Amino acid sequence: LISKNTFDPGSFGELKAWLDATDPKYFSKDDSGNSPASGEGFVKWYDLSGNQHHASIDSGSPTWDSIGINNKPAANLSTAALTLDNSTEAFDAWSKLHVFAVFKITATTTWKRIFGKTSSPSSAASTAWTYFIRRGDYNPPMYAAHFRNNSDSAFMRPSNNSNTASLKNSPGLFVMSWDGANLINRIDGSLNDTVAATGTIGTLSSEPMKIGQSYGLYFSELLIFQDKLSDADQLKLEGYLAHKWALSADLPSGHTYKTSAPNFGGWAIKRASSGGGVIALEMEGAGGEFSTLAPINDGEWHNLTTTFGGGSKKIYLDGNLLASDAQSGSVTASSFPLLIGDSFKSSGTEPKIDDVRFYRKILSPLEVASIYNKGAGDVGQPKFAITSPNTLSASAGRPFSYQITSETAYGITGYNSAITYELLNNPSWLSVISSTGLVTGTPPTAGSYTFEVKGTNALGSRVKEVSLSVSSFADWNYSLSFTTNYSGSSPLEDWNMLIRL
Image (cartoon, rainbow, N blue to C red):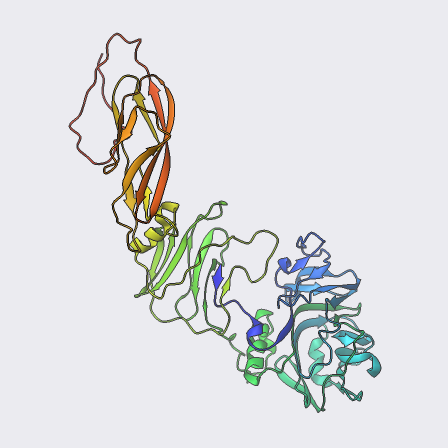
């Protein structure tokens, strides 16, 4: 719902494209945006960077596989290739580049594109930049990064064979960077090759960015930056991807995030990891996930409030406290942006969100209840609710009374100002005392009547419709009125009375 901890690689540099196979909602199997099941084909793999460089079918029939890499999801490109939308000009003639990719190669082949901006990886004239299989028939196989700079002088760097062995038949984490002076590639967190070169990446204005070339290839995640990240951020992203895709065992022993994934900090209010109707307040550095069952999956509007501080964390729903727990510490700082809503729009299951607030204080239970205000809210409202019943009954020819009751909330100046009452669309035999809200009258005949009771104070007014059912006892020979000594201020309801005839 609201998060300051949603992973956002765009906070590290100029992110151009981000493909993540984690969730089927990141794919569309048809033109209607429906998500594929495991083994089903897809027509589009959504770009999560927000730049609309979605991966569409270039050739073949790609599928989404729920256990494609390390029993985790992947796009199966064994018989397919993908093209990034709108990438022909947007990915051309860059001066910097940083790419992170998680993939697995299961084919023995030669001169095949893994990803890049090339129509033929074996041809310098047909390449701007690419990472490709050079000799998959070698043992171990040989891969290469191929660049052509703005002076049209190509430079190709075969990857170190002993390191690239891990990319064949087992998933690998590949990182490639270019800063205008050095082309560097890393495999599973270890430096693999470096080659010195100068200039910008050569233009290839006729060719878009593509992934795969119809051979045994599984792809789980791809991050492309038009930037050169710092060494510290490179390690963070390596650690994040390695732990996410169960590749941490492949990281070298000296890697900063060998034993644990990087902590990006932050907090979130979201559906709990257990799923269903469980809502969580998640706070890195302050207890992690705190959750409780919150019945909000009913298609109705609800007010959800969470507080943290003063030694406790709390979750409220519709003005009522649902759960509370002791908690000290502070939330770990996060460089990620604040997001309202899901970071990726799926197919109609995302919530509607309205009236989002942040208070730099701990709201009291009374303040939380007053903001909800019996469902009326406190924006443009009179800060009170009419709480008297909306149905009542009476007898023809006999006087009756009805007390309008209201409950004030709490907040801005004027919330507790005097309320003046009146009736709207009422029968002529009904009247109200404006200062007290006491309604009296004598129905002349039996029947059903409706009228509105209205309350007004300095901040506004509330109206409530009341239904009156009048019965007639004219056919009875005897009737008797009675009163009680009850002196309470609220109406009696479902009151049992013994009658002996």
